[in-house]
Amino acid sequence: MILDGKTLAKERELALKEEVGTLKEKYNKVPVLATILVGDDPASVTYVRMKENACARVGIESIHVGLEASISEEELVNKIKELNDDENVDGILLQHPIPKHIDESRCFDSIGVNKDVDGVNTASFGAFSHGKEAFKSATPLGIMTLLEHYNVELEGKYAVVVGRSAILGKPVSMLLLNKNATVTIAHSKTKNLPELLKQADIVVACVGKPEFIKKEWLKEGVVIVDAGYNPGNVGDVSKDAYEIASAYTPVPGGVGPMTINMLLTQTVASFRKKMEK
Ligand code: NAP
Image 1: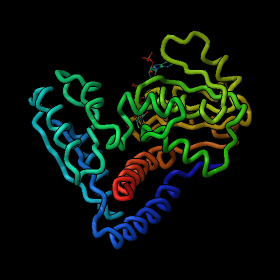
Image 2 (image 1 turned 120 degrees about the horizontal axis):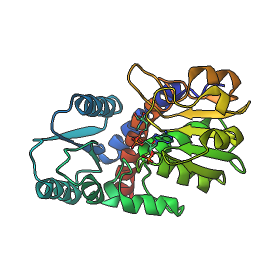
Image 3 (image 1 turned 180 degrees about the horizontal axis):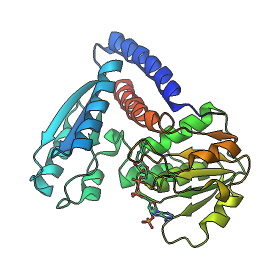
């Protein structure tokens, strides 16, 4: 079975467009997402443009906040606080990575939890890890939505997540745990990765190394979730492993398209919450 994120994201986008239309009729307002881009890194410029285009497709208004790479940490934090205080803004996206002289984690944490629609805030992570209502990290939420859509059973399954980044490996591990999977988080210091993977019913690859996970390391019938996105549209799992998988996310067209969709979904949810207060 192919876990087709591209098709699911398209379907969800149409549904979101309808929802935004209904909300607009009811409130005469639309959700607003502020996108902050610091500097002009070409990949980040492209990602922010893709996110703004997706907003436009569903009728979400985006406010582009372009800042010089030389901006100070204090100025950036103040800008975020200004957006936190702006009643009109429902969500804030701070495009990663930001210049090295700025503490990214502090900036993420200065985004108000009620506007953290990309799920990058430590407080959001704490809340959803404890199973409480909170915005979730976009890519992990996209993975969970995809697995749920295809009815992939998680309860009691053994999942190995390879990678422990704050935006991907760690949060997806918590979400799997909350769905009663038994989870191992592997990383660069893990000693016996092939042995761990051989036991896994579900493998979530978020390593950032092309075709790093080999077919021989996996067991027959495994579910492969490949979040890796390396140059040349190559994932973190060797493509020949699909032959032994019961289900897998293709690269491209699996996890990737779901991420932006989750950002939009959570922006609409934030708007709805504000209006229904
Ligand atoms: P990251 O911050 O670089 O984290 C990579 C993780 O992989 C780290 O935890 C690292 O361990 C671990 N790792 C590195 N070498 C390893 C090894 N030999 N064995 C086991 N673990 C190893 O990357 P990220 O931001 O999480 O992204 C991971 C991948 O997902 C990238 O390809 C990225 O492009 C992709 N991604 C896709 C989306 C999407 O929307 N599709 C979104 C975000 C990221 P240590 O912690 O020990 O260093």
